[in-house]
Length: 362
Ligand SMILES: *Cc1c(COP(=O)(O)O)cnc(C)c1O
Image (cartoon, rainbow, N blue to C red; front, side):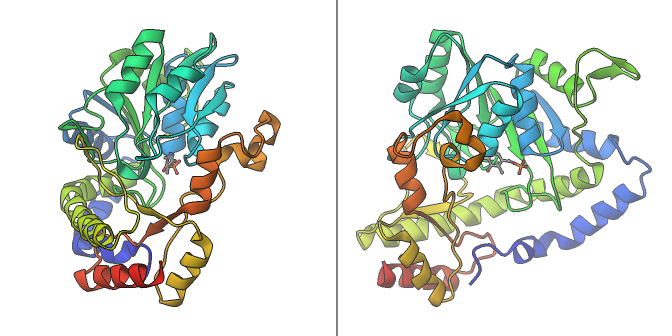
């Protein structure tokens, strides 16, 4: 049983995807155009976000969002110690310094008190990640940001459709999205977007994603080429219509897992009452994780580790001087977390098999 079967997940909408691709291929628009605009409008409406700008991928969305907020050399940006490295790389690409903090141990999301303690005179922004599809506590984080005059950019690459206090992630603030194929809303290749309620940020990203140019051959800032391909936008439009159904299925599977693991006294994700996660990943912890993962593999169950090496211990950040042991919780999570199969196409029989094996092999 695979960790995620992308083919099976999109099988019910495959004819719609292929029709949309054909339509886009025949449209005569290969950069920008109506397919892109339609998707940007639809995704903004789905989230309740005033502005949506398609870009090439999730990393670019983060980088352009930070640039639009004025982050640059000499600045510090507070990031989670336990995230995918893209969150950090976007900060580094701006010439700024990612300053990691430990997550909350219950939700694995950014802790507002830890953020407040990490603020210095150089801090410019806070970059929370809605990790595994569960929203971070934005009211607490926004309060810290407001108190210190900081920008907030939310990495929502794993949280399409998640809700925080009854409101969709993206309905307020500035969020970045990835449409990498395995994300909850995934393209047939790379894609990304930034959504925001701030017209100035939307305008800045609109310039930056197009060589810094609003009028052809007039370049106001040093921008980049970061476009959401209209073919991918056409596919994403079809997939967006099916997103709520897929999310509903993920929530059913997560509820089945959690009820069974709770009954068996096993570790399972903690969800605050104000959070409605979309279960991009269903992550459990085990103190002998590698052996546990091997036992599950021997039973034919595919699992993945998100993530085995925290960014501060990556060779890429060896110049930053973060010693092993400097972020003990992030490092322990890297040793203990394991993502169980989570796919909208998963059957109840498959879910029950995973539950049975996890309980037997824990
Ligand atoms: C996937 C992901 C990204 C990067 O998205 P890409 O589209 O692969 O560039 C950034 N942050 C998080 C948390 C992610 O999961």
